[in-house]
Image 1 (cartoon, helix red, strand yellow):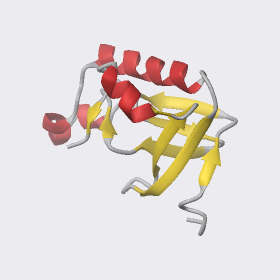
Image 2 (spheres, rainbow, N blue to C red):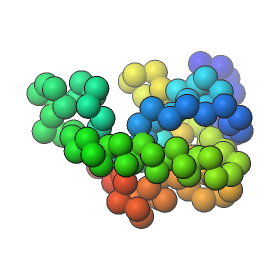
Image 3 (cartoon, one colour):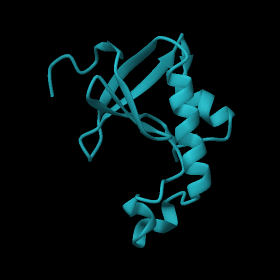
Image 4 (cartoon, rainbow, N blue to C red):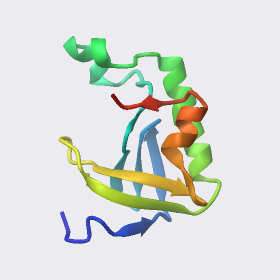
Length: 114
């Protein structure tokens, strides 16, 4: 990981994976401190980890779509915090100064990570 880990990143190319993960200019970003419902391709809903996973697929699609729409609504800033065990960048993310995680939790499209 580059020494610019804590640097602020502005996203110009965004691809949303699910309600808490997206790519910013090719970098895989996991929104810190929230958990969104899983999509059907999630291995978390197919094995012993299921008890901790949020496997409501309809809610998963709605969460993904809400994140996608919100990210398209303005300037995205990624504030890197570290890297998770899957190699994704953990970050708080804002759109026009509004915290994406808080926004999704308010909509009940995500929950605070426990």
